[in-house]
Each structure stands twice: as C-alpha cells, then as structure tokens.
Length: 323
Image 1 (cartoon, rainbow, N blue to C red):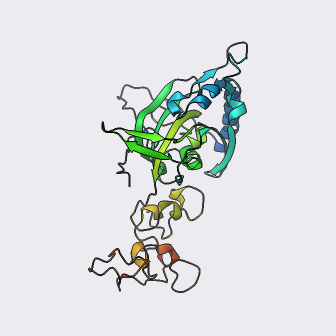
Image 2 (image 1 turned 135 degrees about the vertical axis):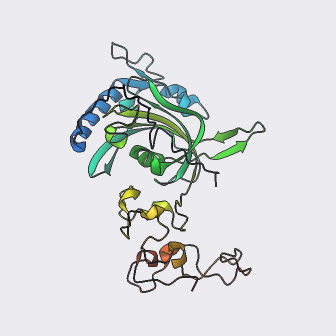
Image 3 (image 1 turned 60 degrees about the horizontal axis):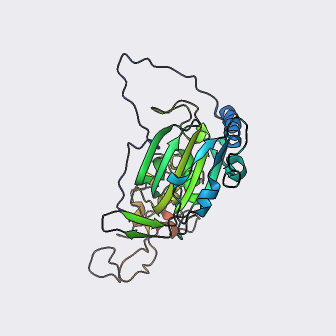
C-alpha cells in the first residue's frame, strides 16, 4: 500500500470550484449534444496536433525523462520546424485511440514518451502516484503538481481512466535520506482530450467545451477496493463500460464499488466467500487458528447453486462463511 490519501479537492476529478459572490455575473451556456461536440473537438484537436511540435530529440537523449521535460510549442508563422533533427510534429508522433463514454464514441490522442519499466499497469479505478501539468491549447497552465501526488482514478475525468492504464509504473524507486523518492524509468506521456472526456460543459475555472492537454509521469499504482469487500473495484464494473457509476446490482442507489452488500441479500459481500482457504498462515477469522478459516479471500469465485451468478451478486444464495 502507498498510504493513500483522498484529495477530493483535486482539480482533475471533483473540480476546483471558485467561490462567487452574489455580485458575480453568472453566464449560462446552453448544453450541447455530446456526439455533435465530439466532432468539433476532434477537428480542433487535429488542427492543434498539426500545428504544434515537441522536443523529441532532447527527450530521446535523456536517460530518465519526466513530464516536466516535455516542451510543446506552436509552429512559427512559416509552418516549419525550427530544428527538424530534434523536433517532431505532434500529429506525426501521437497514437489515436477511441473509447465509448456516456454512449458516445470519443477520439483522443496519446504521446508516449516512455512506457515505464515496472511490471504493473493501473486499472481504470486504481490509485496512482503521479505528477502532472494540465494546460489549454494556448499553453497556459490551469493545474500542476510538481511533486508526486496520490490520486484515485475513479474520481478523475474519464480521459485519465483511459490513458493511465496504457502505461506501466516505474521500474524501481529509492527512498532518499532527505525524505524524497527517486524513481527509475516511470511511465511518461501526454494526453490530448476532447471536452467530452474532460469537463464537457465546464467545471469551476474550466470553461465549457474545452479540449485539454495533460502531461504526466506515472510512478506507482495500487489496486483499489473502495468498499473493502474483497472485490477489487475494477471488477465491480460488471458491464465493462469503465464507469463504476452504472453498476448497482441491488438498485439501492449505492454503486457496487461502494456497496458492502452488492446484491442486498443481507449478507456482506466479503462473507459470501465460501471457497476453501488456501492460505494457511493468515488467520482471517481471528480465532487463533489460521488453518480452519473459510473463504479464500475472493468472493467472485463462489457460486453455490451453480447458476452462473456469483453468490455476492445472487439474491438466491445467502450462505455466509460466518454460519
């Protein structure tokens, strides 16, 4: 575990809401159709990528580049790279990806500077340790973390939960005497997001229908289990849409990833784990004998009535390991 803290004030996820006095004018922007806006955003992103370049040669020569080393600049008026041997147009270097979010297919772009040398990649709902910079097309910065920050991908804009899982964490790290940490070979990249994968109709300081650029360095990740029911949160995405807010098995308005009794049958999800315990060293039930525990720590592989529905999602199966 990384000793996670939940930063509910982080601009990326729940938003930085600027306080307004009663005298502040409030401008109402009509809500746009997401599919139509995606077409406009895609065209705008492609123009941006065609008219901006980055310091590709300099980054390639670095042994351990970070997101802060990435320099993105607009082409000069003549439309030519100032130093073609060391610079590359973004449009020639980015990867094009698509994803479906809120029933709309979105196109977004990723500049992969370094994959990351670690064995793990975060899931879309995991905790991550990152540093990043968020900016507008004109290069102005609206948010930045120059030191590693611990964030929960579940509560960030949708683009982050699509992009970060495509990178690996750092290969290794060293705790320094001064309390800092040095990371070797982390994942480094830039995401170029349409407004529909960012804040869409705006959020606090972010104007409505704004495409955003995030450069980032991925250091570490940790699998999330928000409700501590022994089902990792990424497995609570039953419909596979990368959106935990669409999964509520018992329709109690408490999403599965945050519901300790997913099927509402009165038996906690973690107690519907009836498989024989294969770990004979950990005393899971706290009775002093680690060899007599019931449950292998995974409620997803228990289906007592063999109907294809795991016990923890099946109201007809109410057996408990505590019985």
